[in-house]
Length: 468
Image (cartoon, rainbow, N blue to C red; front, top):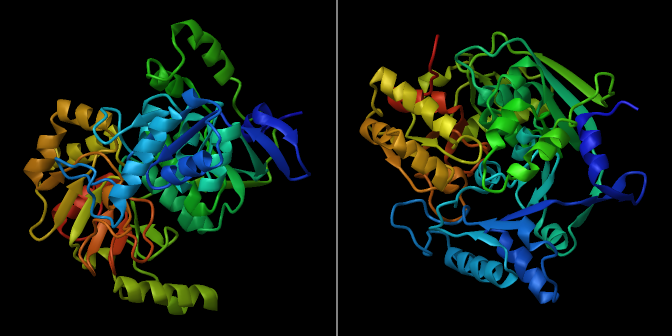
């Protein structure tokens, strides 16, 4: 019987079917971070249980730690030091691999998992973090769980999971030069809404997807959770295999050929049936910028902000009004009418080497500097990304242009009582969420690609780079 990519991944890990809708699934890898990892590990210890497969469990410091140079266990988040120490102690006691603050492989959980080869095609991976779906960009079946589920997975290598539906999203046409993977996913969310993938396993397909780098695919899958999806996957191909070869936790020479042969079986059969299918033309896709307080509030960078009076229903009208009040925007104005106070490059969405190269290349070519009055930060996603960027001189490019150059971590992606932008600041950001208060009290966040962020930082107002 023809199967989708997701069907094959599910079948390969289904231990048994518990009901018509639920199955017991084998979990190959478990990755934790200090904001939720300490809770899962402490719960495991309290129950007198050990980690079933210690070699397959990993933990990193990323969410709470500071990203300023010279950092230590002290953080700006109330109680943050306690989280860090508790996580370190528990990881050591449970004898699992820990990428501590000063470990050369430390970084954002969804950045280090692929770059170290922890996430692999055909594998299942869970993490108590909603953006775990990023790793579907490698062809892994990865999804976010709660701390209780993480505890169960650590103890048993299994989880009870409700089977999601299959939804293929196919991109038609070639991606224009000025657009990026971030623009693709913002366009998807804009078209389908923040509930457009609710309870579904998405498969991104089409020539434009195959032409993306692995890092672009990770960005595309990262924001599937902003569609309310269970996860997202992309069929692995030679691009993925070349990316993984030689990674620290990838199969070694003796096993590589067998692994690659296995990975090549993970694709959707030509006649496989999906529960939902969406086709989107991107031949003329422009850079996308968000205007409101949901990723679905996105639009072409040069479009006009929608008028609530023209909304199709009362619910949408009220949502647009509320978003525009919070964001201090006027209907029918343009985003370029609004000056920014800050610009942020980082997060699990856009902090990889290709993202920094993209932004750095713009700065090199243009010779522009950050506009007066704009606070600009660049936060590499991992120690490996940071070292590679510095080896290429990107750190000096950013510093010379007026950006702060930080240590790896989640940083200003989210506000949890720690570092934040000034109250009421307007920020253009490569992050994945623009909810009210996401980057600080009353902070107004506009989502964009690294290219649009650096262009806006230099212009001093919201804009995009490339052919206009």
